[in-house]
Length: 493
Image (cartoon, rainbow, N blue to C red; front, top):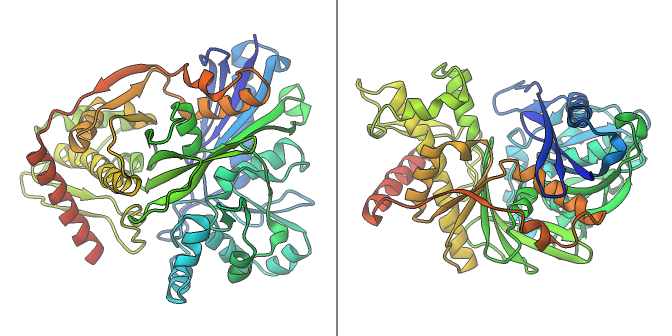
């Protein structure tokens, strides 16, 4: 049976999932890796560990499926976006730990660019805002911090890439230095309208063009991987950033369709079709994917802290032993008891974009318990998403009729009901939990002919459960007003 292997390299773990032609999971493997926090606001990964964990789970998934590597028709990759890797072309050795998308060390660089009046130029060309979230200022920081790095880069000795580029390089023993438009559009260096790297933006940041990967379509056969990795020379045939892959896997192929992924952060994307829609509400205009000569665009709202809030309750405060305990704990109280948690641990993303904001908890009394804090944490995830959707509807001029959800936290029924209530919109949860990996597999499967069209793949989507809004509009608006008041306090702290 022909299968597609999806490599899903995320922020906290590397996973590999084998799908058959009906979109069913044949096997799965996962491995967590270490997170580094060298200074407040700094987040790093060991790029070598990312690669080693990813290839290890790929081999494990193939082995567990009981098939030969030759039965794998293609490999599709999806990855944590914006995370920045700089390495030597000759040796493949990273010059520094990977700087993770959550990292805030380049806030001062962004502020200087903003003070120089360059924010509108970057927004107009790239669809993005000037924020440490994106790759360009991380790369500039690396070139400034590492002795002789910029000189070596100009000589063509070094390579830059987001995690997709780093994995493709290693899978092919350095034969491929590529990315796709969905990842390139997250760097602050890619002109989304012309579909190419922007020389003016490179010059403004003093980034040599010699560092950059070639931008290829999101679905095409790029090359075969080295056979010794998995036992066969399998075609690498699909690449997309994790949120774009999830949008594709959710079957959001038509303009106006929206999905939200509840992972480490929350990421809401609306397909806007072949036309990039400029945001008036500080959302991002980004490339969704490119298949053949056709590029699809999306509006995106990025929330930095979602599942990461639950991790903080578990690891930072010790309120939980396991992350999945939060639903039962939060169900122990009828409401949050007036507690509001603003999870600005890494600043605030859309639509606020305040790198200087810090986390805060308001409204605690002597009667506050860990159950109230747990419930406030879930409400914070839902409220952040409500802010993004409001901005998205205003930008696109549409009213959402349904939100498709995925990611680990979408299995939390309480959170999904809160979300439906605070949005006033039905929530549709799919039967297949691994939507992001399915999207990557779909892009690869299209390239090798396992599926004939995106619509054929989208037809595999089916609903597992639907959550209908049960809150009246007055209560909804009151809850959101209290939340936004707390956010304003957190920003002004």
